[in-house]
Image (cartoon, rainbow, N blue to C red; front, side, top):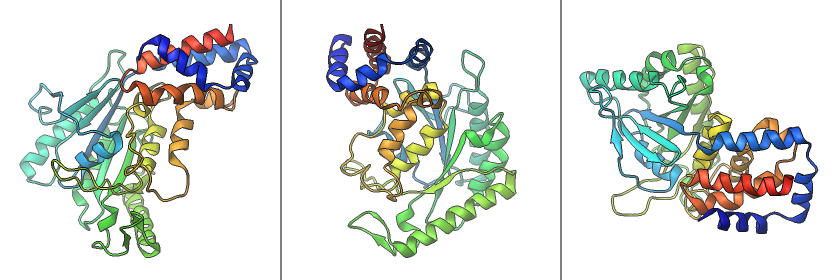
Length: 330
């Protein structure tokens, strides 16, 4: 999609009321919006996904971002060569090997994770924006994962580690050996819901006791994926993405949201029903300092109309938004 097409799409998507609203902003407000969009244009987000063997890292990545991805690179250093890298335009996913196979392999993988966490970008900032640690909700033995969080990840997350770490408890459908799962609606019944809430509380408490941090946790089911066949429907994947976007720096959120799974039919329909997480994700695209000065409705309409259609071309999409806003502003 070229810039002209983007601008035509944007012009059609914005109502006259939205355009009038944007024209009424102060010069300072307009500058803030354009500055944020320009900063987002080339910003690259990096997410590290890790956990014990069998926790469902690959199926989670597929459910979140809607495609079976080919590995496009690995670390060059012996310690990081086993960490797969998926480059999706402005979003990079780092997929570390599962832990728990053997003490020898675990030590090597831990060193690779540490080295990745300590890597810096061209500006001298830590490269990894968010670490997603996945636990196996069907297992009672989570000692390996707790050790990974408290002994390996948290000590190497830099300042405010609680703002860069998220714990997902996968395989919620198997948490009670498959019992109390509603296969029709792809969600837990009341009894399993209580069980999962208690598991989340227990995980948070154990992490708090281990490293003194309050880390957000949530239960979900990525959906079983058999090679060559469609992935099974997921549960709470949209909520998981919402939590990830919430932790990602403001100017990098568009890079993540632009790659989200578009297949709502079987991936984003089923969640806990507490919020409409698709709407919440879109709201998170606009930084708080912009939401404070506008309702965000007009900006959201402009962004929402192009993000689904341009795929990885985040820079072009944002360029189109900037071009349209400038034409409205001035």
